[in-house]
Length: 399
Image (tube, rainbow, N blue to C red):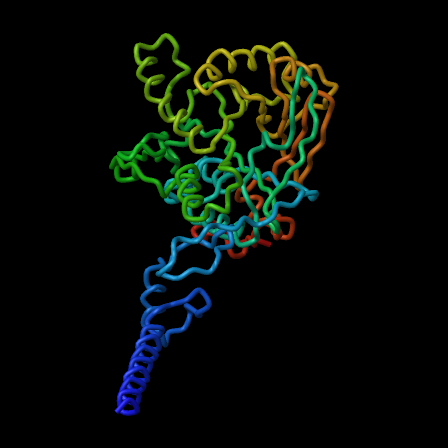
């Protein structure tokens, strides 16, 4: 009898073990572990996980540890930083041609627009190429330190494989001729409080858009590709003052509309600074530094500081109008240093950066119709003009 009960109990134990084994085996087939390949389309769970990832999601600058839907969100693993020791590119643009039919209409301004501006289509293609070529926007102020008038180079540490790029925009003032020849009219804040551009279309319609001017286009590009900006940097906006700034007539101090212009532009300036943009002096009257007298140069600089600086805040960046620079020993250069400018930017065909005891000299490449047409080989590290060129331009394409 005892033997019979022993056999019955043994059979029950074996049965229980078999049931447990089957349950564990079946359950394991419905759990994704970190070691499983989520790229496999044979797994329903894997396919569902992949479908949740937007197709347009940007390539990250951070490597993400393996994870599964059953685990917490992965913790980013930072790529190592390396000391950059190569040349530092600085490129600049003028406001974009939003309406080519006005810019290239054959009037007296058409040749100038063909020479010195780029279209929206060209700018977008340039951004794509810069990103593919591993450039990353940096703050020009990160290149040096200044203390009690002494300027010293600053080490630049970047994510591995990234190359630094300074971007600037000249004459983002929206002069009268610009508004009549295909540029925007002014920068504004849209309904979400973000910087956009206000336009009058060739048909006379008023529109506010984020896809026809450098600032909002670049803001959106960095939002989609955060690894294109190092530490939140965007670009430098170089302003004159003789027709106001950013499309607001802040030059008309005695006008009854001055306060409206000032109150209109200040929120835009504030948002630009909050989103990584900085400002530079481009002279008040866009005068040729090398050609005018020292006295007139001083008057021009001081008027800019009196009218423009109170709106945008102090800046240490001076961008020469026409790219017309002077040597560091020149009295005009020394006057700029005395007035608080410590980095002077000219124009040149290749990268150039030189440090003086009290200042920095930097050249910028002009990105415009002339550069696209005549300087393809020099620009190849940045982009290929043949790929960028907008066929709406008059005349032949790049050489």
